[in-house]
Length: 243
Image 1: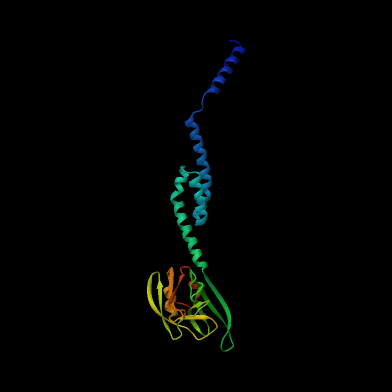
Image 2: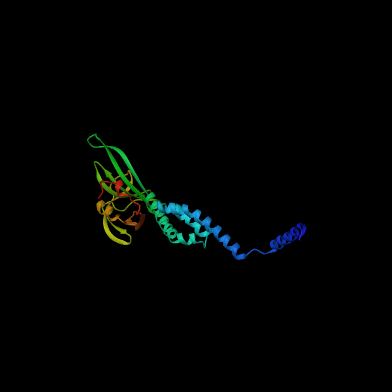
């Protein structure tokens, strides 16, 4: 066989080899390996966020891995941790939300003897406006105050209408569904439409571990109204004198 014939045979063999169809299983395996490699690379972000307990980030990275690379060994490996991160991220978001409902103030005040002091307060608005004068529902605010001269107090504040509690009244106070009766009183002042919850210490203690507080109070417009507060985000350390 001369060189020309050998070259022709080699070319023919190459043509025949080129006509062979690729192995579908091999191609599938190659794609799966490529997908797993990409999933493993993406999962490094998830593993890092999970280890640092950055639940929002871990949940976001976990979503990418388990959806974009579904079916890969890496996606299955992180699935349980991803679901855990999702739950903890949701809990953390809710805690941040309820914490943001509270406002804390530290206000310089002049004391009776002319000295300087500081008034501390923690306040929160009802989760829904309340109709208190027969017209449009308005915000109702609950305030805990610690004044150097006046002491500690807890009271509700209305924007319109008035409390029917000048001679004292009974309030129905509920904490996560458990209701008890407490005393209320409306001071004779035009500075604010305020009504004290008389046992402020007991009310404060009731908030420990509570999620929701409701207070039913009488109004001059007739009948009673109820204000409900999401109190689970209270930070007691902001009011160190309250126990």
